[in-house]
Picture 1 (tube, rainbow, N blue to C red):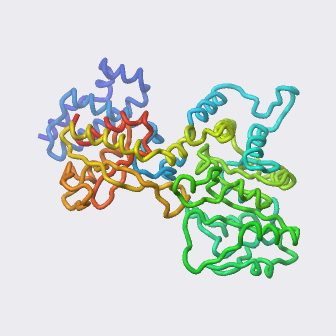
Picture 2: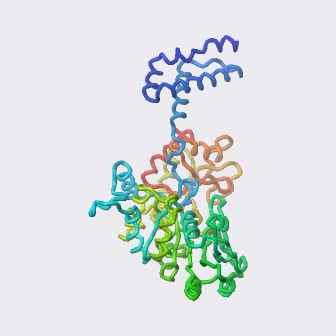
Amino acid sequence: MSVDALRRLPSVDRLLQEEAMQALVAEYGHAAIVEAIRAALDEARQAIQAGAPPPGHSALRQAVIVQAEALWRPTLRPVINASGVIIHTNLGRALLSRAALAAMQAVGGGYSNLEFDLSLGERGSRYSHVVGLLARLVGAESALVVNNNAAAVLLALSALAKGKEVIVSRGQAVEIGGGFRIPDVLRQSGARLVEVGTTNRTRLADYETAIGPKTAALLRVHTSNFRLIGFTESVPLSDLVALGQRHRLPVLDDLGSGALLDTAAFGLAHEPMVQESIAAGASLVCFSGDKLLGGPQAGIIVGQQALVEKLRRHPLARAVRVDKATLAGLQATLRHYLRGEATVQVPVWRMIALPLAEIEARAGAWATRLGEWGVPASVVDGQSTVGGGSLPGETLPTRVVVVASDEKGTDKGARGTRGTRGKGGVEEVARRLRTGEPPVVGRIERGLLLLDPRTVLPEEEAGLLAALRRALGKG
């Protein structure tokens, strides 16, 4: 039976001659459709050998279409983030403002004056497009932009401390994202790490005792991705700066997240601000462009003119420099801050500042729509997080939609909300959401699938609801 069925399968050439296949060739290209046909036929053969009947002609054509779409679908795709994690590292960190996106598209789709001074008609500096903005925003003398904050720290240490010593508190020799560690960055720069104090307590005297003829700099690293509480002590940046000035040593401050607004004004703990570090006298301050700043991925260095110039002239600066699109997006993002409109234009800050009443209204609308489809849903209290290694342990109150639970779900705030079970339980629904179009990422807590409106842009709501309906088998 299977041999006869296998013989009845059409050949690649025969399928290629069909009008429907020729239409696909026009859309995807000859080579891609040949590959898709072969893959569809291989699947059909395997199914027949397992005892399945041979596919009909329409089913085979549909299989080819599915294969062709899979071959051409980009692996990097937009995702709707309904997890409530604002700066979601795995989902691309900070969203860009519309102005930033427009600026990046404008310079990416044509020529630009990236390194050309239009007034003088001669070569210019690519950094001139952001240096003045950064200097005004944080009160620094100068600035430099590289491709990420790890590169900013590496460049600063390579240019200022290669072959010499850098003193850092033992409690600040941290590991950052992706398994990268500050001691490793120091070693790569050619500097030698000198740890002082203990994990939980470091005093100014510890730094002073460690200073010697080979000391090149004092380094402070903001522990942005964890919090040490209890019996702790650290040295204020202003005291470290005063010590550096007495010994004529630069003080480098690695802030990581790069907050330009006071997070405490939004009910969060205070995150050290770049302006505060410059005001305290730090020689150089390094921070990210795509975390709390809310711009494209970049490592930003601000501080003293002489030191910034030394970094700019270092050979490594060219290896880690940023492109025109990044500079255009960063410039547009910085302008939002200068205009005082960051909380309404920069998505990260829009989400942080989003009123609870607005979140509740949107959550209620989603739950109502689910009810119309015959899926019980409720709106319960929840917590959003900033994410991205910023403000560890800090959350923002939110309202979340409980979409479904498995049979063991016991959250009392969502009693009676058991939208799907068994194969259609929360794990399966979450999987369908992730693999649908558009992909939607929620979060599962205590056997419940939760969707947080805080991290879903209003213009994404229609796509989210459509994806949700398909995942629940309601249309």
